[in-house]
Length: 198
Image: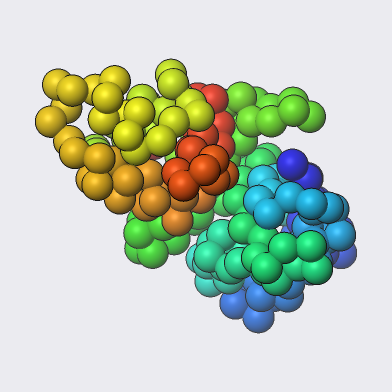
């Protein structure tokens, strides 16, 4: 996990506007993550907005969601997946981010409690459907888990292994779970121990 202060990219500016500024900040954040990643092929990136008064929707789309959707080529791995999590959002910033996440159908986590070891609690901006929420709930009580292990422990759900696999892959795409391969199977873990919706 790495924490980056947006103010370090923005200088004196307290108002972040436009996709161009967002893309510049995304690029600088990606560079910082690559330097810190070492052997890891996944990295949680806390973007600290302390000192930023406002950011536009186009900024959030380019800087934050852009970072989540971009896999960066690293020297040690073919690709590095980044999991951006925002922190220290004002009410206005939070509202703007929620609007972007809803319009893009791509959620974003806001850290409310964390330590050096990882995220303990987050608030979700945007929305995910009920089946993904249910999958996250199960993961939070049984991670790390595979699609097969979720199917085995939840026979009442009447969901087959393929469907669990699709849900888990979608949660990874949305940067709500990390994953690693063990043998032939992917094992998934939630990015944070606890999530508040809305």
